Amino acid sequence: MAKQLRCADIVPGCDYTAWAETEEELMELVVAHARSAHGIEEVTPEIAEKVRSAVEEV
Image (cartoon, rainbow, N blue to C red; front, top):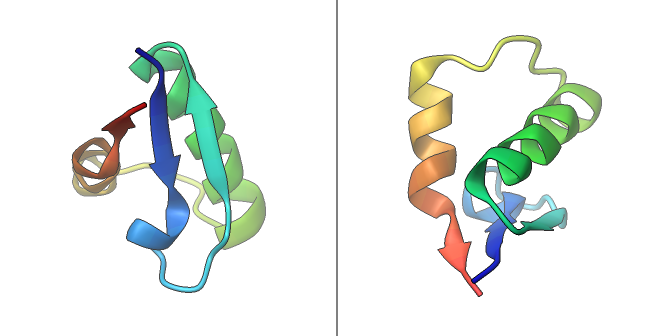
């Protein structure tokens, strides 16, 4: 099963959605998006946990 993350589940109003085959690939996409769209330079353990909890299997 593929993994999906809707950024709006973490950042209200953001329409970005990422899909990948593995959680590792998904996290790479999400980190790149967080840097470019939200100016987040460092993904703290707290942010990573929020992201992981919002990941869905599709």
